[in-house]
Amino acid sequence: MGNSAEKRRQGQGIGLGGRYARWLAPAVSGPAAALELIATMVIAMGLAWLVLPQNPLLLGMGFPWAWLLPVILALRYGTLIGVGSVLMLLGGWFFFESLGSYTSAFPRMFFLGGLLLVLVSGQFGDVWGTRLARARAVNRYLDERLAALTKNHYLLRISHARLENDLLARPTTLRDTLSQMRAVAMGDAARGVAGQPDMLPGAQPMLQVVAQACQIEGAALFACDGERISPQAAASIGPAFELNLDDPLVRHCLDTRELAHLRSSGLQQDAETRYVAVAPVLAGSDRLIGVLVVERMPFLSLTYENLQLLMVLMGYYADGVEHGQATHGIQALMPAIPYAFALDYARLSRLRQETGVESSVVALVFDLDEARDALFEQVVRSRRALDVAWPARSPRQRAMLTLMPLSDSQAVSAYLVRIEDMLRAQFGTDFATSHIGVYSLTVPATGAEDALVRLLQRCQIDGATATDATAPRPAASGVVAGNNAPVPASAGTQAG
Image 1 (cartoon, rainbow, N blue to C red):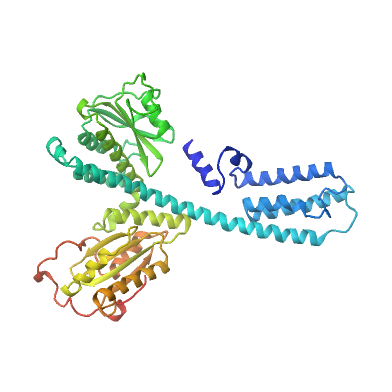
Image 2 (cartoon, one colour):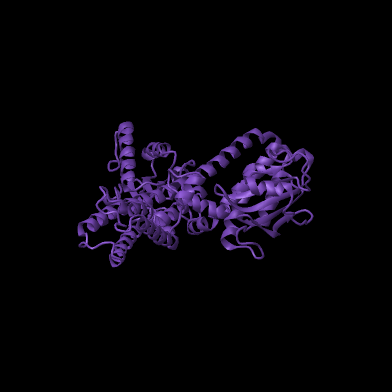
């Protein structure tokens, strides 16, 4: 049901909404649009023939009424359906002529002008349909970023609020919990775990980490595909139990896609349930891939904050599962790459493959000397809020790699001009004078991992052994001799 609703939303225009609008303009395509074309044109010409048998195409009535329906079809479905309606209308002329409705010559200018009008309308519909699809894809990517940002913000808030209590009551910290869950999602999502559903890899070790963090004594994780829940548990903690699909908490969780417990709003106060809480496992913003059913939990742990932590941890795991396979390929080639950078790079490569929307990676390479420390730190501080930065350092070079979502070559040029103007205003220098290497890469739709490896090779950064460039520098003796030599002119400004 969720997938059909998503397809219906994607097929609607910006201004269409509500039950009556979907009934008047349903979102159909392909064979359904062709059937609608044939049925609509046949019914319209049939009604016109019944009303005006001597002029079913409504010629010479002050306005070309016969072209109104083909124009509407062309605007809705594009040029191909519009040309089909023109052919239907042309066939109607010869059919009515055989019946004796028309005895005059063939109206060439009437059909020529109507054909041009339908072609213009169809082109307009095609262009705006493509733009709308690209806008939906961009918004879907931004929704994923917003969902991840919301979860990270909540994790940051509760980690500060509960640091003192968790340090005494829990054997592991929140940071350790997230690190363990990330390792589970990244490792098992890429390799696969025997005997477990493909959509919930690493479910058992993940559930053990969650049970330790939230003090759960008995729970089970069930895989879910839309509204259908697998009866076999993918992972369990404590005594095994069978899932009751008619339980009020389970039904409330599936209907609302929210955490369900006895004090949930909208749940009947006299509802009888054997479970403590039911948490959905949501990948992205609204795709349900599993349900966590908690049967036993200490009374003192049954708090709003602990249940919210449980919900956020499940969402963190779901996001890792959704993007674990894509990020694993990148991190296998470049183990030093940060998880956030690899995750967004994989998302943007998928976005380029689906819609053609371009994103870019800009690399600024600095020498390892004290004269360029201030320049590098200024560049690190000047990144945009939407960008994902990776400050990397090798034994001879250090680079600031900036992933710029939804940015083409013009946006890259504007970014480089802004950085160079800032350096010129702050330090009176530019890229060429300071021997700063500039490299750029348009995120490809295929072969994204190899393209990023080649970019690092041009930057003289090893993705397997690179370290964080914002960490304190090693002693001066560790600097390779000759590292302050001027960079060749060819490395000054290059575009990949």
